[in-house]
Length: 432
Image (cartoon, rainbow, N blue to C red):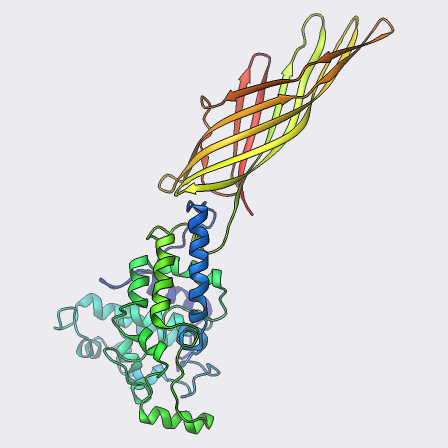
């Protein structure tokens, strides 16, 4: 077993260093995508993606998948491995700080001797494994370090006593499904690989693990079947995936990727749940009518909530209708007047989300209806009521720049000045 001989902080540094640089030709660890970016997929395709991944989840949570992906850790006490603890120290001790031994055991990409970079990567990975401390000793992390160092076959050769598997040795997966929800799994796939890698794994899978998983053989040898009987009392039988066959799973996987536009997106949970975005805002209207005759103002405050409907990839429409009261007041030497007039405004947004620039561009129009009211004036001891009619106007605000960040919870402040006043708008995209 790995020896926990160094401080946790140092172990973390070593593991991160090992994970930060992958050998040439190996998969790089993907940097985390922006979780606050807006998912630009059309509403229809989000529903298709969620439905397809929901079908896939029954397989992903099956013991045939989840045992290999994190639920069983053969490298730790209490890791639920029926064959007991697999000692990595036993398999790797002869290579620790021994570049010559590593060079003799590894092959280069062309089948010849390994390169100096390969030997160095392997040595770094072996030291990482020997010095790792929890939580860096979980099965998925160890599997990733083994792969990045190119030493899977050196470390897992002992597994061949119980598990025969070609064309490579039996091994655990470098990503953990254990304890993850459907949304977690969906987001993890988008962070760790691109669609071609994902579909390649579930369809052709050069290492053939997926096919063995569906068959449920566990790759058990006669000796492995004997260990199963001795440890559990159970005779060997195939334990295949029962929720769905491989063809149906591949079909669902293709439908999921197609719904995402054949590319994984930012944020990582894009297409993983029926997320809805709402364009919210506050609109303040202020006019100063003060002059030598007296002081006066017209003011209003309203809030808008416009659900964003993505009609096509990256294109949305949003409509908000709000009712508010606009107040006009004037006070002069001859008396004072006040008008409280109900307004109904309908804001219409038509916008595009540009994933490359991280910006939303949009055109906006406002339809305004003023309902009938009466201005009440007091002058010379008299009260005068002057009716105001209903009006309706349509204003195109395209001349103003409504560009804003394509991220949730970031506010864009706009100001539309005009004579004696302004309309101030604050817009924010929120996730519901």
